[in-house]
Image 1 (cartoon, rainbow, N blue to C red):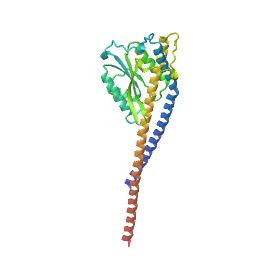
Image 2 (cartoon, rainbow, N blue to C red):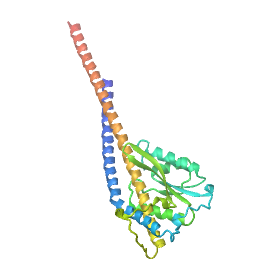
Image 3 (tube, helix red, strand yellow):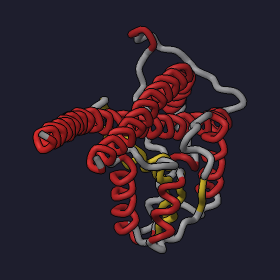
Image 4 (cartoon, rainbow, N blue to C red):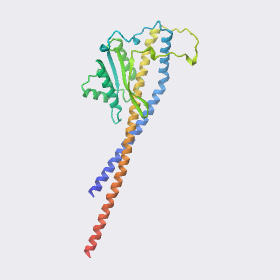
Length: 294
């Protein structure tokens, strides 16, 4: 009977675990759809900023000499100060999501003599702190709730450091959700901007010539556009990372739920066999007692 009680307790424990993993799967699925919709809603705005920057570069190339496009080639590679924004989650139970992006970040830090580390997410902060890797800045509020205000705060901080020559390059390391089955950690350079990343295309396929005038001047307009463009890139990286985390957690929870169901089938089978054996033993004892009484 003790064996039956232990099996019953084990079954109840697995059933509770199955309820939790199912709930986490549904929550992650809802969060994923919400984040995707949020990114889709603001995409046209940032796409328009991108095309406007491309238009300025195309029509005002001789007038543009902006610090955001200054690659500071006079600084040797070994002396360049490079800032890395590393985006992780705030919690685990997401498969290899956090592990993959942290390993890429660690490799980049080893390759860069003068690296500055900026962390998004509790998992990253704990990881680098435990390994005595100095953290130059923390954005603890962004991992679980990416939004434009927080992207703007991060952008303003990075632009300030870049314009005051405290950083020569700014990179963001995040996880790109290529598909539901492929999550790829990426290193993307935010600053300085590369003009080649802004190819010019005439709207609606038109090839007519036109004179474009930006007031009060292309340089001043660029000063307003570039922060918005970088804000969009950071917001996109944050949302992609968040979507990747939710997708990884969905996969992990689905696998856990499937394993729990398989375990329940085996436990129920074992429980029924043990119960059947106990009943058979009781019947045998009753029959044996009756025969002994005769």
